Image (tube, rainbow, N blue to C red):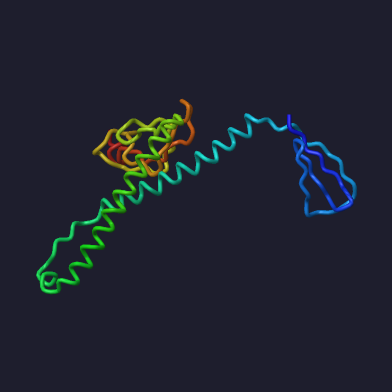
Length: 185
C-alpha cells in the first residue's frame, strides 16, 4: 500500500512516497496529508490502456500509409522520358523510394499486428456482416438495393476486442433500403 506524505522542511515543501523524498517547487505552511491508497492493478490497467490506445493509433496511421502507397498508379516511361533520360531516372528513383516505404509500412504493420495478437487484441470483422450494435456504432447510413438492410458496407474506424471483451466499437456505414422502395411495399 503506497502512501504519500507531504511535509514542510526548512528548505521548502517535500513529498515522500514509499520511502522516497522529493522536493516540490511550492513552499508554504506545514502540511501533512495522506493520499488514499493507490491500487497497483488499477494503475497497471490504466497504463496498459494508454499504451494500447497509442499502439492502435499507430496501427491506423500505418494502415493509411499502406493504403495510400497501394493506391498509386504504375508510371511507365513515355516518349519524352526516353529522350530526357535524367528526368526519367529521377522519377524512377522517387518510385523506388515509395515502393520501399510501402514495404516498410507493411512490415511494420505486420509486426504491430503480431504484437497486438500477443496481447489478445483482435480487430472486429465487420464489412459484409450484419450490423451488431454491441460491437459497432453506425456513423453513416446508405440507401441501396445492392445489399441487404442492416449489412455493414464500409468500416470507417476498426473496432477491437481485448481479452474477449469489447475495447472499442467499430464505426461503420450500414445499408438501408431506399425509402421509396420501403414505402411502396
